[in-house]
Length: 292
Image (cartoon, rainbow, N blue to C red; front, side, top):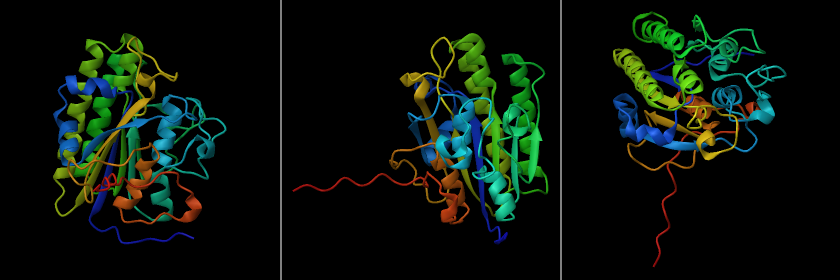
């Protein structure tokens, strides 16, 4: 049985930027990501031992709030998944809580019934914009179009989604083709500019309280590529700001499963125990005990 609650002023935007290495961020011009970190935090995430350092399993964990043992996505082909039991947050909120939700991006299995997908089964509004080919240049165009669509939905349409996910894939594609050199760095900075446009769109909505979460799924080897267990591949990160997140305060160790858990908390929704989420909302690190 579906239950609906008043939406209230709370809103959540999750921006997923695929394949951004944490160790390179201090060298890059990313003022919009920096602004989120300054208003809240930016902290590392280690992809756990059970999860392949691949986009499919990591994004499934991020948006469902459960690990691979439950959602069943073990590679970039999503066949054999259990996403009907453990849906993404945009689908769960739309179906069970009658919330307006939105998801946008250009990687097929996230949004289409291809390669065992979709991961985002039934958000209130879905925008799939395909790259014309699998090249860094085509993915930059795709991400531009995705960003423009998301700007419209978040800032100027009447949809007013309470929870949204926007996927940007050009950074990862650039690393696969060209490695993590100058072109890769430029791709990360371009993604940050697109993040800035999304932040500007939600800033134009008066009377709303926004939580913004930016997350990457995995890292990359210097020459490009991932799927192994090196620190470069396993190290991801989460940045977030919004109600209840204290600027600059240390946070408890983070996991990808915490993203969906925090989406629900930010919307003041208590998860049903039957959801069996593996994550928890972002919490401050425990204060060290006083000695003496």
